[in-house]
Structure formats: C-alpha cells, structure tokens
Length: 214
Image 1 (tube, rainbow, N blue to C red):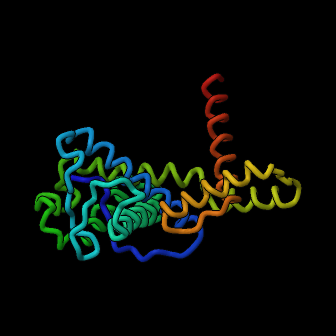
Image 2 (tube, rainbow, N blue to C red; image 1 turned 60 degrees about the vertical axis):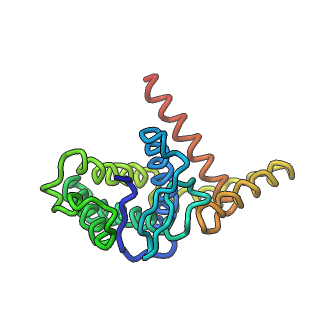
C-alpha cells in the first residue's frame, strides 16, 4: 500500500503548518515513489491508478508532474500528521492512531484499497502501524527544525544586524531555483526564503558533524 495516506483536515493558510506541510507532502510522495519502483521494477512505467479527489489518477509519477488532486492528497496526509503531533506531542501511538483515522476518513470511498486496511488502528498488523508511525516520526523531526519562536528570533537578528550581498549571477541562479521549487510545490517560494532555508540546512549539518566528533 502506498505510504501517502491522507485526511480531510482543513488547511490553514500561512505559518509553520503550511510551510512544513508543503515540503512534507512533496517528500512523502517522492519517498513512496522511490520505494514503489524499487520493489515493483516491472511496474516502473505502468500507470498506478488511485482515487484522488473523486477521480482516478495515475500516482506513479514524479511530484513535479503529479496530478494536482494527487498532490492535494499528499498535502492532506501532511496536515493529518501535523495535527496528530500537535494533539498528542508525547504519545506516539495516539498520534499514529489519529493519522490512521484520518486516512480511513479520506479513503473510505476508494475501492482499490484493501479492506483489511480499514480496521481500527489497534487491529492493524505492525507493518501497517509502522506506516502511520513513520508519518508521526517524520513530522516530529520536521517540527524540531522549524518553529515559530526560532523563525522569529532568526528573522529579528538578521533584520537588525546582517546584510547579505550577492552578485547578479548568483542571484539569478537563486531566482531560477525558487521559481522551480514554486512550480513543484504549487505555491510561491521567494529567493530570500530559499537562501535562509539553505543556510539553516548547512548550519544543521555542521552542528550534527560537530556533535559526532565530540
């Protein structure tokens, strides 16, 4: 079963939830697609039709060329994972059960899904529970790196004391990358936001390397 489970959780415009969910949804599908094609090499180029947004669409495609309804399905999965972690920050099993409940609510009309997957979370085999747990774990990890408090502090510090100067060629490449990511995610990503995200990613890797050496 694809790991891109989904829910009908109502999206919230802007803020950490929206940013994290955009990136999470794209990563979720890409991870599923890679694993699906690895485990089903004969079906690598064959359509895999699934019910998404009331219509059957091919989900065996890269994120950039995925049908918008399928993208929305992954986005709902991201919202469900976000809400689960926020509701049950200290209870992994309760959060995983919530993810499963939202998946059922979204997929109850999809006859292509095995009936066994519509059992209560407690009755699922461990291999299926692990898929829900993976959603919770990934979202928990994502939220550790992006928080409103950290974002406000970083923005205030940068605005007050730092100015970054880039040459025209570098800025043009940054604009092109931001445009490409915007098209892939279906929402606007500014060059400035991409620059900050890249700097934070490098800092996180450097910090991780120092911790391992210590």
